[in-house]
Length: 515
Image (tube, rainbow, N blue to C red):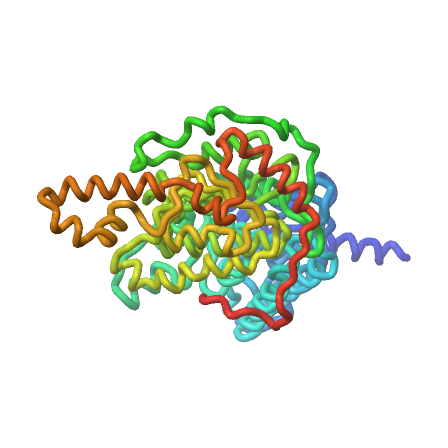
């Protein structure tokens, strides 16, 4: 090779490595944001990221793009290692024409998505884009279509994680929504179909970007996002933590770590966690922390549908997914959002071979016209469907209330629980004592000299006969009644025994979940 060849390659590499220029980089940093390459350097183990297609250039010539310089066409793609395990990743570069997506930009993402499927490794997308590159017209739209099709193809085959690190609008929001988990950065990331200016022009509504589609909005109100992060670095650290729980793909088992906690540990805290007053709530997170290794969890959707908890944890080094009623919120009753939240988490865990632990303390589905009119029947059916469909090991512990349809829905033996335990405080019944007694003994109560006293008498009888787990245990619907401090060793023993579980379903293209 001649000196000219080396010089040309050096110049092309230098141009490709450049970001959007010093001024754009400075603005990015003033907003508290990292650049695309800085983010990838944090995500991947030091020196492991291998960039692909860095010499790709756009080919559109309309509207002045023939004179534009867009290093890497506004996106950095490649593969690297996280804790020594391979991933594929892309990071949009807002300093290069706002990270807008055009034909070449999209083709780079298509290629790295295809590579993730070929390698059988997780895909991480770091989104920071102004949306479709208007100058490229339908080519930009075609690019998004190719991404969406690949999101669907990758779903259930490899984990897909999206981190929103800047503004995302229009069609650009749908790819993250099709991925498994969405991380958002407070004060710098936004997601909306139409922005505040268009909304004001069309409807007259005056709303800020933060209120419309900021990180807090999507974490606490819409449920679009799963994690709220203080800055780019925290988001990336949490993504690395999440990946530590997950297998590389659906054909692998989740990683098993060297246990750092005694599998025989019996936590006396559990014996005192249920309040004496059955109407009083408590924080189910305390129960989860007492059961899992080192009390360590990674909770998703922590701010949305707080009447149910979904998180990753470990039992004796094995990764699990936890779904738990939260009596401290809405008494743990199931509603539309809680049903959706739990159902999607269950299906993710089942797709990637993570055993499920379900902790139950729920009085039932939330009553009221608002819930009925927003489709609690349809949404609640998703939870039944998801548990029944799941073939991973399923462990259930009833800590207190398990009433009616919610008893069935929260991974009962009837939906395929492999182990169903109950604490002595468990109350398994069709409905609460007050309502049940008023129906069963309606005439007797009405005819009594003192109806109120008769009602209380019948409530006590109902509670004595049915407010316990022993009838269910006598039928074999509950495998055992255990003291709370005995729960962790029993779960670990069951999980070890179930590690070779195999379960098949009738051959079919796919079921028709009530969406």
